Amino acid sequence: MKDTYSRGYKAAALVLLLIELAVLCLPVFGGSTAFLLLKGFWQHGNPLQHIAAPLLLLICPAISLFLLLKIQTSRTADTTDKFVKDLLPHNENTPADCGTLFFLSGPLTNQSFPLPAYTNVFLGRSSQLCQIVVNTADISRKHICLCYHAAQHTFVITDYSANGTYNTDGERLIANTSIEVPDGSVFYIGNKQTSFRLSA
Image 1 (cartoon, helix red, strand yellow):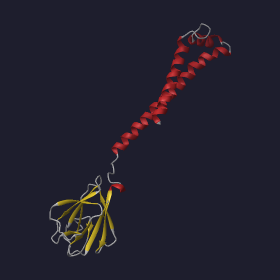
Image 2 (image 1 turned 180 degrees about the vertical axis):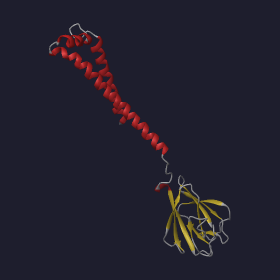
Image 3 (image 1 turned 120 degrees about the vertical axis):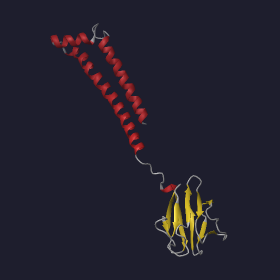
Image 4 (image 1 turned 60 degrees about the vertical axis):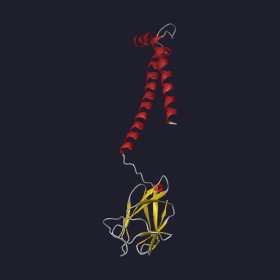
């Protein structure tokens, strides 16, 4: 829409400039150019009809200049907005780009935690090492690492624990090995008293 307005202003400005050039340079006033009429107006106080040329000499440039300035101001504003937007830090993790960890059992039952896309989030007993803290003895200080892959709506989970992380089939995840799991996956950690679900 802005481009349409800009083209319209530019076309109008060009038309007015052509009119101005015609008035200035061509003998369109009874064989006289606007310059001659303007000179006569100032020197001899010519009647009202001769004021047309001076008025055109003033009005056409003023309007065309206004339109051109409007175009330039609009372009400058758009460029400035783009420049400012480029300088501002981009928030890569909008709510739609965050997965969710929801505790089904354990000390944090019914609590949920955001998992920003493509960001490693650690779960464990240590508040210094982990963003999600589960303070029970069976949970390692840094128990697991979770990373949400927004494009695929999947999660990568890596177990670092002593007591293990288990899927719903009771199989223990291989330590220090990352696996990709789908949306809705459920895991048990430690002595299996704590469980959570991963949701995209």
